[in-house]
Image (tube, rainbow, N blue to C red; front, side, top):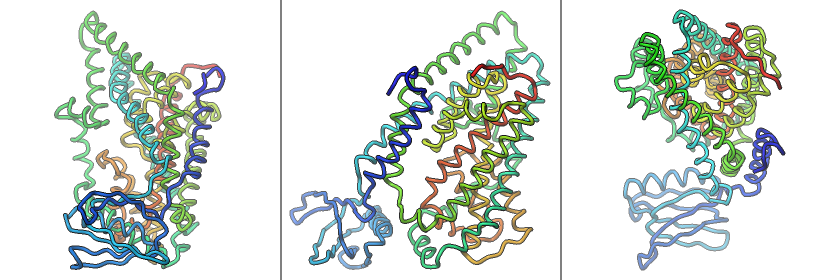
Length: 502
């Protein structure tokens, strides 16, 4: 790591991103290599790396079931063996090489190949965890200070109404862009039948077909769920919208108590906020290391075979994200926020890089706060409300990706979506982005709901699961940029942005 006086932090992170990508390519995993643990004839546990094999025959419970896999079916092989190991079945394998074969007894585990690039991943995870642990206390402190500083409660209501309106508007635009690009590029028409069959077979067991049964879209239930029964539990579970509600009510209530007592509370949370900001600055000193580890592991693990087969789908999603990020948000920032577009993207670049590396809006939230407040000049009273709310309900990148994905899956199945069905996708994606619980994998859950709303088999998600991690990185950039753009737009429209020198 170099001092920022020598090289700015965002440049260091960009260099780490580039070097991590190169490192991941050099030390990429061998897609066809597998690691197994098994028992030998003396029942001593052994570990082996299996390379350059032609076929593997799997025997379950001493031949009660038998499966054969070629070298191009590694994913299916691992999937099948893991399933039977988890079910406590006896698993033996016969490995056929070019000129010989061998038998391994009683498999205990099977895993992908590992390289030095994938072994660095814990460093990246540590960096993300450090950022995530700051998010909740920073949101609480910032929002309480911001709400208590607004002497006019009506002004907060006005800001809230404008924020929701902008979030909904940009989400509608994002989904529309996704649908238009999906229909124009037609990525599903460019996937060979054999490829679609292979992808369906490989990822069908990871498809959350029935998960949507637990996530019905109900706006009234969603509104009720905003109010936490236990705010401490909401903080522990990372229920950001409930945390925002509690902190907002807490901050507003401070306005109605004796000022001499209120000052003690405000002073305490001001101190907490300053401490959290300082922690962000300290943690960001290891950002280049964390980014390098995350990117190198992702690149090393990524299957280039699946990248080539879904290249048109990937390009369609990325095109939509680029248009929405650099055109839609530029218009919002320029004409509503009255803020310079180049300054906006220049000041937000650190948060965008961290968002891309981590694939997490929540983990990036402390960095987004820092960029919006300290570089752009948005006051805490605005950012403390808008950014946490956006991290929960504003998912423009995810919504756009779902529009493209729905059209792509329909095209692979040979289904033509009429105007009514595409309007259904728009409405369902909009409601899902607002009314779906903030849980891990929410984008896939929302996509299941959307596909079911237009009677497309949810199994089709298996077609795109292989590249979801890559696209998740890209759509997270759009998500956090959208949060910041709306924040700047609201603050600019209210003439609350502090002028900064660049």
